[in-house]
Image (cartoon, rainbow, N blue to C red; front, side, top):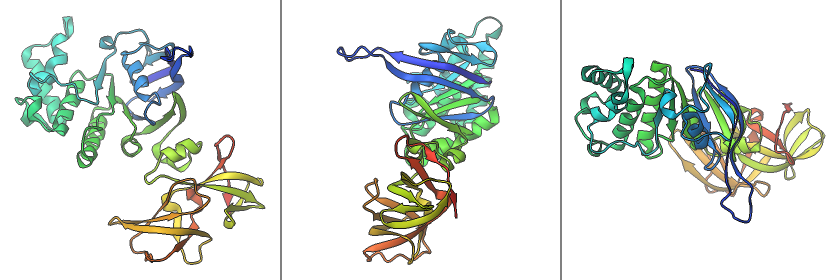
Length: 367
């Protein structure tokens, strides 16, 4: 099911009695979500992603704009008539009901030609329970289940009616790291099997990038960039997107372009073309630092963290806006952890330039 958002805006009254301006939670959101895709809504807390999900679900009404499911205008349609499945952050299971009863609950309210017999409801419940691998837990109650199992019950309950659109509101935030990884892989598998258009809200950029077909990066109600996860990571539209995506985060430096050379501090770190002489912000991804004895970028060494497959070289530089620089290198590369400084060469495709006034990314050619 294709979901179309047309100039979607949501305003809330200000709680500040001295200021009467409305708080704009979602500002002119315009986007077509393709049929059968998994879309990640991504951004920091308060960016408007959960409000957008609530507008799509019908739990909140937009101040202006329209929402279409295919050719159907659902803007003013109540949630129960939209054909959605909704999974909340806190699971919202009925504690006094068994897993089977929790899953079949949405089917019990069907009427007319859609009304099902008890046997048909149990068949559908077992079908989706097998899909999320909880079919052996049907007679247990939520209090007897782990967090991951409860989350699977919530997903099964959302899927049992085979919704037109599946909405997931930070469904993994209550799980530990290992279980979160496992569950997000399960969500992706289920979405591919069912081919249900899915919208996944998270503040965790690693989650969004790992399972989404496309991501939407938001800040303060405004959409900053939409694209495939790797494309957004490789070509952030502005400094905010570059800083928000990536673990460890991108290192940002005060820099300048002079006569086709990029300078950080007094060091000419890269030969570039296509950029006039100007002061810039320089963003370097952690994997863009290449440890070399004669590298042009000299940094003070703070320490080395060995993480199995990779090592993280922690350094600092007077021109860096981050508290520390984290460079990811292969563990086979020897680092003198007792030294006072390290030198890096830079991988041009991992270096981004940003305008100091607009913070928009500046395209350049490396030489």
